[in-house]
Image 1 (cartoon, rainbow, N blue to C red):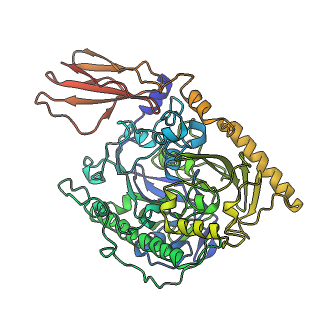
Image 2: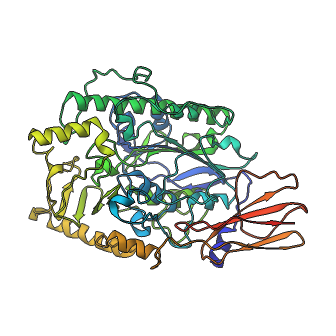
Length: 584
């Protein structure tokens, strides 16, 4: 632990000088054609990083080939940046995906791949639990904070574990880079929920709370909760638009209505993205900031979200580099969400810790080799479980079903609120679904599935039994076996046994030990006996003023006489310690 803390104490210079970082691939496309570009990107030594994160987002926007809806702000971002069409989530649902993004580790390796394991305990008969990663694991935002960055999150967390208080300077509906100190670099995340699957529910309407994205960091602003009525909802697209319906969904008025909602939601999200980008420009920070736009996994419709087909894992990404470097280009590199944390550190000049399972695809510590494969998994969804693993190269997808006697479709109540899902179930019961639409409702699964995603993008023609593809099948089988072994994933392990493993045999969630504080001439020293625990503290001045953010303890610090220190210890996956105080 001491060796690790020593590594984290290394602070970078605040001086704004320019360095060259290995960046975009030389195999880049411009105007639809392959062009030769420099593999270097000129960046500030401590660039700002802005993440614009939308939910349940397939490639439904013009910059990724779908011109159904106009998205002026995202299209501008793509025109000024690089589009990445081959980004894949590790899961088809949000919390496990966000665990991968923030830790740089596969959710199946840390007990994070179950969705809503803190709920549905009466249904499953299991205790509430969350992920328990290795002791050295930190959220990437905490690592950045330890290196001087202001880190804000507006405002969804949902990592399949409770975020330590040391993770963010601010995580709230008001969180914004505008609350940082002067000349302090920032990492800011803005989450847009309009495109979430719940936006397809009836009665339909936008979330009033989304207005926060137009209000910058104004903590005096208040807004209404809930949703607008359908009559109040902005209309960005004619309801008579002709939509391209994927073959796994029926072409009915109900499905077309939901397709309209999907695209209309994207247009509203685009407006909110534009509001945040406008604030960045107003602050004069655009050309000192690397901007990421991406979704937290694939699309919101049935047979998209929660599944390991491309429709559930593939999500578009755009990165705009300062001064529009490599603008109007496309990078076809395979990328995984586990690559985000190491890449973020690499871009700001910090070497990614060795525990991270992803690899940096940009920056000083960019991996020498591109990915050959991405990996995905599906396990627990609310009160229902399965065990599925997937691996994909640049063309073929291999899926292994660990419960072949269990059907594909899981009756997740949340999903069944979607009108299209209700339509599917109605047509299923009537026997009116065609052969492709019926695939999802088979009562058992093939043990293995293999798809040519280039010729069969909807993954409906299983090639696993075709001897023509034996070589590819064996290659991807081997890759999956090696991956499972490398990250310590046992898909056959019962969930109750997984909990026992995460809790190291204990009957209940482990608890972080209370921090110990010592003072000598007003110099405070802290420690915690729980291996890998982060120590957060606040200095309360003589007037009793308590700071909003928890500072991260890295080395002894001095405080004025008459002050008081409050401290708490955290280890991800453990119950936080008690808050202790020491007065001088």
